[in-house]
Amino acid sequence: IPHLDQAVQLVNALFRDNSFTGSLPRLPQSIKYITFQNNSLTGTIPNSWASLCRLAGLGVSDNRLSGSFPPAFFHNPLDQFLVDSNNFSGAIPKSLCRTVEYLRLDRNPYLSCPLPSCCVHYGECDDYIPGQSCCDDSC
Image 1: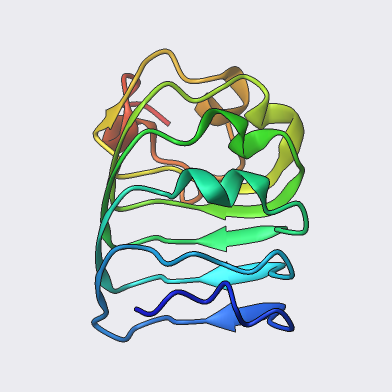
Image 2: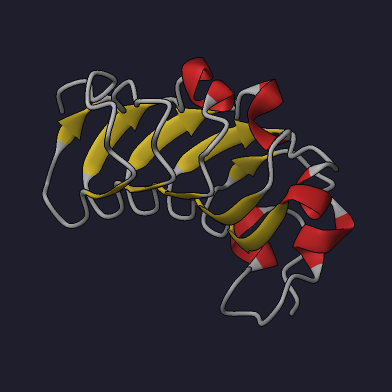
């Protein structure tokens, strides 16, 4: 995927179901919603994405992404944070409970426990599957 940071007018982008490979690209500051779901992307979420102050929704589900989330990533509110079915690891900050409206973390077997309380009992079981993400295998 080419870097998109020069597309300064880009606000919403949907790159879903394309069999893309490689790492996640640099993004422009104008981006509000970005989706790379159901591809074959590898690597980590770039640290530069933490400075995308307009970003409101991120979808990177069903890839082969790994690593931890950039520490500053959850400073701004997000409508959606869809990162299920990857290999993310590390701790999920407690600030996530205050900053994310809709969350998908399931099927990330390397996330550190305990998850923040908002994750453990988040919405319906279809939205968060504790047994496939972390410690608790009951709904």
